[in-house]
Length: 74
Image 1: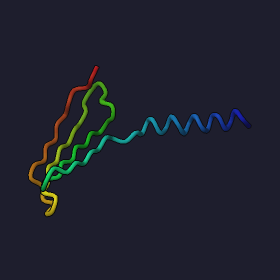
Image 2: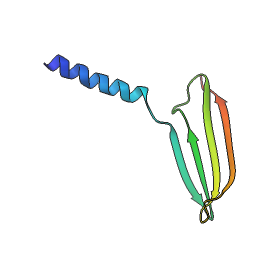
Image 3: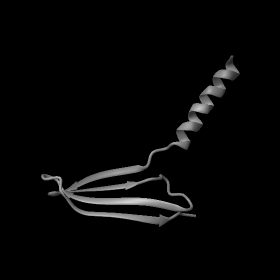
């Protein structure tokens, strides 16, 4: 029974690592709000996507949106 519970616990921990979320940060600077999102944290070898948005905080309208693909960090 203990081996079975240890196996289930290990399986849950491994699945959490495999489906890790990306990184997302929101900061406000005066009347603007900047948001940066990445699809993988930490970056891996291969393509890593990053999205940058700058908005007016009161209206919520986008002033700038950029999508980039960055090479992985060795």
